[in-house]
Image (cartoon, rainbow, N blue to C red):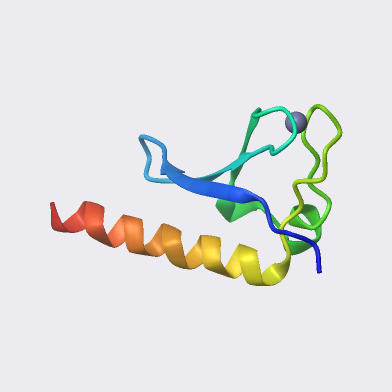
Length: 77
Ligand SMILES: [Zn+2]
C-alpha cells in the first residue's frame, strides 16, 4: 500500500480550506483548494519535482473532515 503524503489544512481569508501537501522528496509545498479538488485529481497529484503526492479517497475524506473541524473552531472564537 502506498504511503499517503503529509498534509495540512489552511484557511484563506475567505475561509476557503486549502490543502497543503508537503513533498517527501524536496520539501516543496503544493497547495490546492480543497473544495475544487476532485478525487480523481487528488489521485493524480504530483509535486513540481515529479514526486508522487497523490491522495487516495480515504485521505481526501480525512482532509475534508479536518477542514470542517477547523472551520467550526474558527466560528467559536
Ligand atoms: Zn517535490
